[in-house]
Length: 259
Length: 331
Image 1 (cartoon, chains in turn purple, red):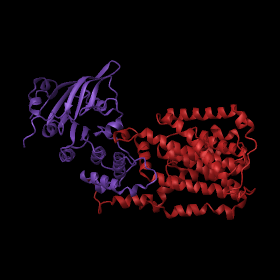
Image 2 (image 1 turned 90 degrees about the vertical axis):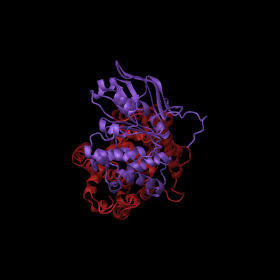
Image 3 (image 1 turned 135 degrees about the vertical axis):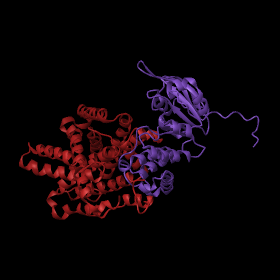
Image 4 (image 1 turned 60 degrees about the horizontal axis):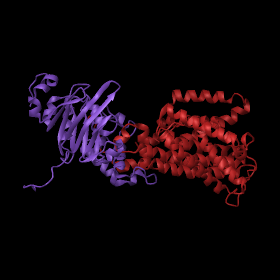
């Protein structure tokens, strides 16, 4: 396993430089520079209102930053539209279910697959004739345990299933980087394990940044932790480092010892 | 999880079944031939219904599938009507040529305006389409050298269909022509809504916020369907100009935009058939009620509309759908 010594350092999968955003006088992102290494399982934590979801909205292009840059690898994607960033391999899920209520899970995921394959503009072929896309969608649903209920309308699915469908839609875009905004939000504790088990089974080719409030899950799944407070990055490091960081313990962990 | 299923759903069979022609559809289309035999006196009305149905079908593609509300759809209808009418005054009275030209002209207008349409939703979109409709109406009114203004277009002469079938007084040719165009466009629209693109349109209707997050260029999809719907509306306009041999400013009236919306909502948006059923109800009601009291007939339509929206939010068809057992096996 001898790596070539002269190989250039691999750029982080995702990084931000000096990212800032204000709504009027309210600063929601203040000069945020962070990075997520290739293949990482990074957790983004912080108290409510720290600006975690705002950061995801900025990274995915749903909000425009007032200043700063967002990079995928070495490419600056700050000027790209949200759907163009998805095409570059940046996918997200939503804290509050953002699904297609009257489509069934199969249709919804097939739609995402069709967009990924660039065939969603095709108005002449029947959907059922796009067998490869349908198979792929069905496989994604199967990998999350949704295959059996995939022909039920989304709004009739159990809440936990809807959370899994959130992830399925993101996976169907074949992401290189997956941003998960509280993937288990609102899911009962016993079922949230299923959500995280699904995430643990993801390919290591996919880099994951997830927001999570349950510290047990964070310390179990995260390879690194990024702590946000009041629109700024307070600390960034391994769970051990974060657990030992006095500032973090003071503002966030309330002195409790983890890791 | 919570749901136990005896057999896992077969995704291919499920999607195939959704797109399959149902027996009741064939019955419906066979029934459209009835006027030829049972109501030959009403063929002119039948042809007006087919044209209104085509117009409503066009609105269904944008409203029922993509969730794009329009209160100015008559602009596209009118441009199609004036194009076919004007061509005939210049000596090109061939119906199919006029039909194609009407589709192209309205499609072009739709394409140009779609860049605005794709950026807005809800109330803003209603106001914008309303404004565009009024604007086109006023342009046609002022350009009387071209359109004849409020006197209507003079000298519309439509040749025989396919060079063989002149438009007769009883409306045989008119209804056959309108019905065939409606059916052909319907088959096209049916294909479209069952395609990946049709699914993308439903995605836009269901959740425009999620669409970009799955990599979908929603504005591009909206521009495409708006252009297609515009061309179909233009065809409907061209058909009206040709089958009645008249084009007046009425083709661009706000009332026409409102009427087509009423037809679609009555029948039920998002089924393709809703516009057709709505057109039948609306046009027959107008024909009957206006015979009794021409001033009051819209009272009844208004009452019907209020009741349908209150009690049958998915339109008349949506109500039938709930009651019909033939659809449930597909879902």
